[in-house]
Image 1 (cartoon, rainbow, N blue to C red):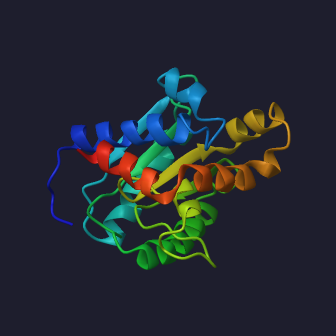
Image 2: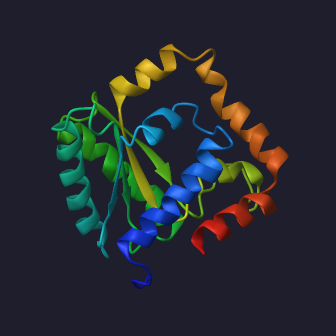
Amino acid sequence: MKKTHSSDSIIAQTRCWIERMVIALNLCPFARKPYEAGLVRYVVSEAHEPEQLLHDLEAELAYLQGTDPKLVETSILIHPYVLGDFLDYNDFLDVVDDLLVQQGYDEAIQIASLHPHYQFAGTRPDDAENYTNRSPYPMLHLLRTEGVARAIAGYARPERIPERNIAQMERLGAEQARRILRECME
């Protein structure tokens, strides 16, 4: 993908999506608090090759690990110029998992995967449930494991979140989800 937007506009589009999809539809019941407290860090990678993105990911992992959670709870690494193909992105997630283990981050940080063409196994490309993980740009969401554990501890039946999200997206419908994403990109 060619560079067509500034980092500021990419972040604004991402924030719109978080507000209108993730928070408004409660797709992640733990997202509102750090978002509203300003504890989410947004980083736009200029990478055009997976190796460059891996370098940016290493830097962001080190930053998050070395920063007080009271200042930055979570980080979103947006990479609009690399891994636009979902299958390539999905394969890259194995490299990400290996990096977490090799660098010793696997106990402290987990990665949530988000992509404009996200597709769960066994679904059709236009199935509404895929929109639970569809974002304006390819992204890696870095989450502190400790923060996730705290959030889950205060939430009744967290294992039902994916099931609830699928039902929520089916009620909303794929066309409405596409419209929201489109509006955020404008």
